[in-house]
Image (cartoon, rainbow, N blue to C red; front, side, top):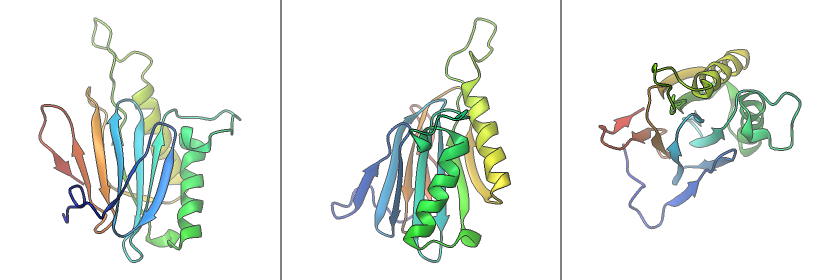
Length: 167
């Protein structure tokens, strides 16, 4: 993986909760501290265009003020923005990070199961949109950060006291 994380000339964009970003080539798209939210990354290897949405909740239920907040609106919205920038839909692949069960009851059950609901909603919408998932680090019981390198489309996933992984 070519590293942009330490290069001063690299363009680094922090994608905050319920936000999105689309960029190209020498950019690094970052989500810090993903818990039950899901980071949805799309990449067109030919144009080196990448997009990242920080999905917070599974369904908008008609609330469309912040499209990137919900899985059912964030994914089509991000696809449209990437195509506007020059990506080709048929070349897009997805990688997913997050959806953790962060808060558990004494019996070990995830409270409200928002992470699982987010994962299910994201996967459902990607299936409807016919976008293939080529990598993921989902669920579990801890938060993570993701660093999406648009030079090569690889994502470094880091979590406290855990081995980094590359998708």
